[in-house]
Length: 215
Ligand SMILES: [Zn+2]
Image (cartoon, rainbow, N blue to C red):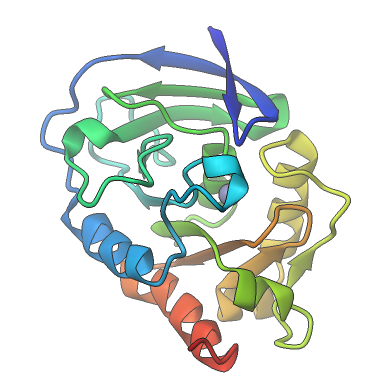
């Protein structure tokens, strides 16, 4: 076990086995990542978040491993935001997660960030959800309340057990499930979208990006 720090502040317990993943299905996530990177919802630039990479995408992979964990998922690795294209080595497979204890077990040549705990809680709470996208978009985030995006209060920090509990509670609401997006007021510019398919997870981000009148 080791302590990991993400975005400079949040600590969590990671049990990470560094080994290559055998041909994980990365094509769908890479396609959406490429679009979200163009919209600057994923990336790494000197003038945002002290230069840390931001945004991560995941896909449930229930049948990929021999762990027989239906909540197992593939996620873009920590601090890969600057890369134009990701290969298998830039992904992590989360094989176990205990959001309430801030614990993750993962394998792959890349490690997951603490933000993977928020992805984990969505897969554990909603069995029909297969894709979770976490992005940073200042224009949507600043208009969260005007756009009636379900919000997690500013008092909760991302990547903490309290945030995981808040996410589980909010996504149990059917209207929130229909919108497929939540805004984290305590995580600058932070949004999470989710869906049964990648297109359903990605669409709310595009929809609200248009409504927020970008460009
Ligand atoms: Zn974030």
